[in-house]
Image (tube, rainbow, N blue to C red; front, side, top):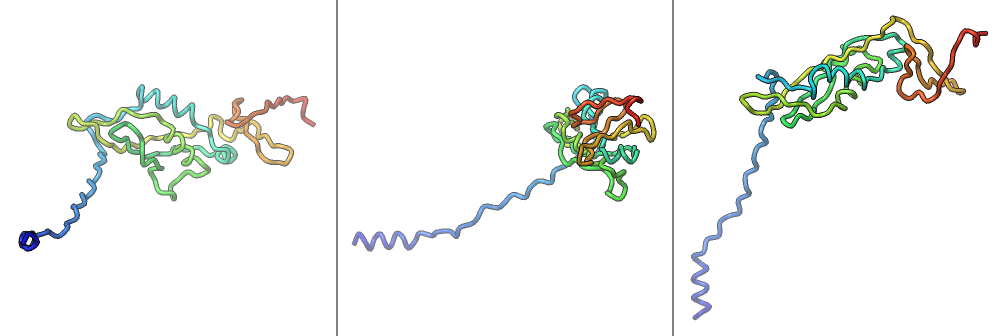
Length: 178
């Protein structure tokens, strides 16, 4: 009888179908174009200009071809101040070329955390645009391109300053000419 009683008790037991928990739709991340308090590079605009000038390595190809120009780099300053989505602001058909865009993006990727933008007293993600100017001081003037014994370019001396990667000193004076 105990078995019969147990059987009768389980007959009334209803086991619901398994229902998988609903997946939460990912929230659309809001990136502001305009905010009440703009994002700021640590130390302000002057420090950002110093940072860019210290970090820029003028691309060799642009030096050889005497190419100058302004590259507009677009990025998002996130709520935590980190930069993301870093890219040239214009389509490739509008680029200056000669490595300028790639160099500008490389420098922006090296930037430290920014002070984030604020909207309604909250830190928010904000899109920014940073103009980076590549300018040759003396048009058409490249002092000296240095080649190794195999004829490969190993660097360019420009306005008395060696570009990054030059490891050997080169002396040049009029007496060395044939």
